[in-house]
Image 1 (tube, one colour):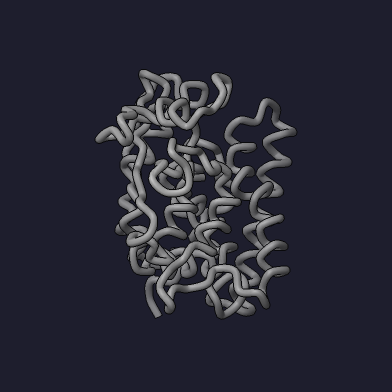
Image 2 (image 1 turned 90 degrees about the horizontal axis):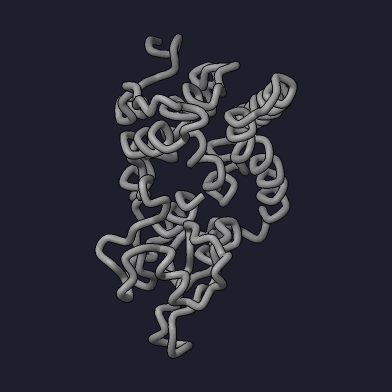
Length: 261
């Protein structure tokens, strides 16, 4: 979920007003490492504890932290819910020409799409991957691809973006899941009922989003594969990380059947 907040940070060009730190997954230690340490904290857990969170509070990303140099004498955890942080970053002070990812006229459309995408797609890939029964998997897969059908149809009717002419938080919510599709969710989580290339409008939307300034720098296909295949023992007990498609080539290619005129 941290990827979506990173995208808002990049798309709105908040580098000058909000420092972005990346945490590295330490699978052996079961925690997030901060390299180099920040506020004398070598891990995200240390940072959470420095912020005064209770011992049973899990250290997760993303996290918005006040380092204690402005509104409080000590560091404070301001929030770690990705959806809430996306909205907060969209309202964060920015340049006058910074994009608004939640235009007032599209509030209802954005909410409607987010209410569909979160359970059916963002959570849906995990419901497929961690299904405990055939029935649970079938239901999750059905909901997942029905939602993708709806997005593809909406893009065909009124694109280039999910809510029409303007890029919104609905697009930001969907992109992190779809950019990992062929690399992780299709092969490891069994999200394989329909190849993504069979959704030509969705395929073009993904390429269009990836081409936005700053977005490609947030995408590391090899790191994602190493993380998912290497860390999810129940789904990949051998720990073998198979070779996968090159993300750059995926973003440059056309869906099958659309290579030629």
